[in-house]
Image (cartoon, rainbow, N blue to C red; front, side, top):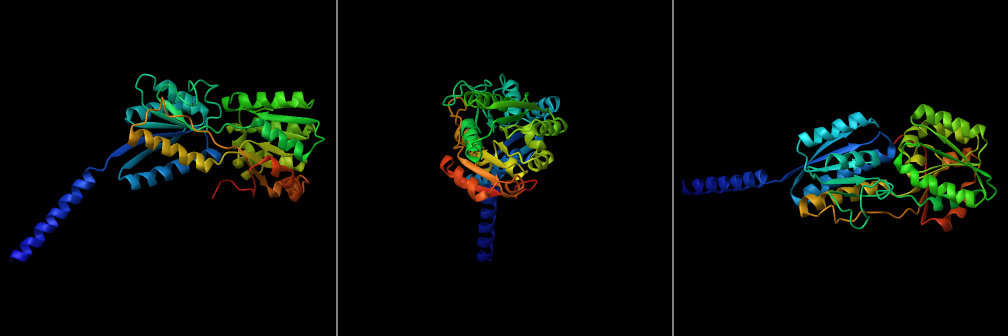
Length: 337
């Protein structure tokens, strides 16, 4: 009888300790808002979620994710952020420049920490005072594009290019700096610049068709979410005309563009999650937590499109190799596996 009683007491103690451990598990609410449904931004969100889950397991805490997508609608974006505030989130993550800027404005008084992701130029849009010391309740990761590097690739593949088209959404802050840099580069080289814009998929399709009519030798698009969302609808138009589309992310190449040059968005998403965890778990101050930037040295070539436009893959990859840290290949698909 004493042995049975001893066993029961031991079990009760173990159960009590387990219950206390479970009860003491800290939960953090994280509100994530995506700007639009496209391969790049979705890849970022997926990796943020996965990395936070891993960190939670490692640290014995739980991250409760509240996720939404505003689909480029400013009114919807504002409502999503207000919902996060009402739900008392501990931290917000804004994916893409418009979301980050809206979160910045909505948290000026309540000081909810904000971590942005995939903001091409956080300085130019006034999100931070400096990259090293953001200065307020907001920091994050930048997918800044080395525009000159992409321009160099255009002329490595075709030294005789005389006309380059710039395809972008004029309302996208993420495109402003890169487009200005591209214009300066091309004008200094004496190359004709043709610009066509679109604010939605229909307009981007029309803009791509206009590029064909203008007989451009190549088209450049920076990290522009509007064009990214339309890439699956335009890549065949450009490829059939033999026009290479040079872009600012590998997701464009995934969706059919000839080449994507830029950061690893999976890694960018993971590092965004690490920054969020650093703030929530270790008390890091966003005001002094430096914005993270990445090496833009990887060129991703869509081999199917490469063949369609009449380029020899071995020749162009050899031409690109001295200008990149890595040249990799991809084939057309809707989203990353």
